[in-house]
Amino acid sequence: SYELTQPPSVSVSPGQTASITCSGDRLGDKYACWYQQKPGQSPVLVIYQDNKRPSGIPERFSGSNSGNTATLTISGTQAMDEADYYCQAWDSSTAIFGGGTKLTVL
Amino acid sequence: EVQLVESGGGLVQPGGSLRLSCADSGFTFSIHWMSWVRQAPGKGLEWVANIKQDGSEKYYVDSVKGRFTISRDNAKNSLYLQMNSLRAEDTAIYYCARCHSSSWYHDYWGQGTLVTVSS
Image 1 (cartoon, each protein chain N blue to C red):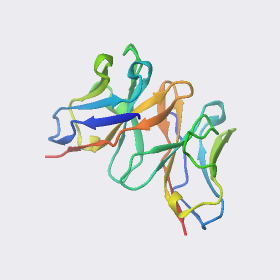
Image 2 (spheres, chains in turn yellow, green):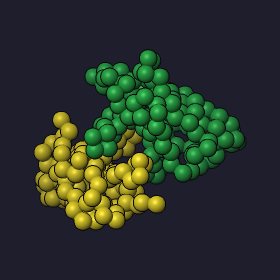
Image 3 (cartoon, rainbow over the protein chains, first blue to last red):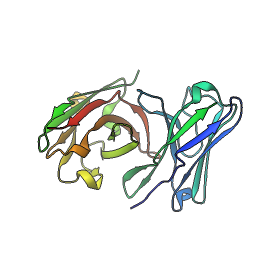
Image 4 (cartoon, rainbow over the protein chains, first blue to last red):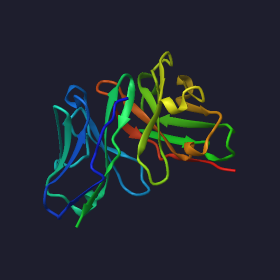
């Protein structure tokens, strides 16, 4: 079965750039999207179709997807960006989520 | 405003059944695929099932095949998940989510309903 692998945790200083990776076999051939989830809240879509931002998502969020890796980049990271982030793709009509990455802003 | 409101969660014994509902408003429900996604306590997101606009196609994660059934009523703008033969490992918050089939992402999520399977 298809799997997506994310690092369990990433740390970043305020104002710096955070990069969260998501790896899967030929992931670049599929569309990847990313969700942000803060404690006690529902997931929020932050990137879809590899690199598009939904309305209301700050420009500091960007995405890329090539080869076996999709990357979520947060430029000028703010304290409010501290959350869990999940990548997601589809394979054989099923949705696959990565294991999630806890982003710590310190 | 798009709203997805789940209900029907609760405490159930192993082997029992539960039916979750998701009432949707603020968008044309009948033109969207819909999904159920769950999250066990302290764990990550796991897609459970999805259903095509007219209900003619349904897909499930292997761990629930034969036990869970996804359905919808477009006249009532509602999504359902019938869960039978429940196991402790089904304990989770269950979210309904709108699925955008252009590139397969979930753009709106409900607040979730907690299902606890325990004796």
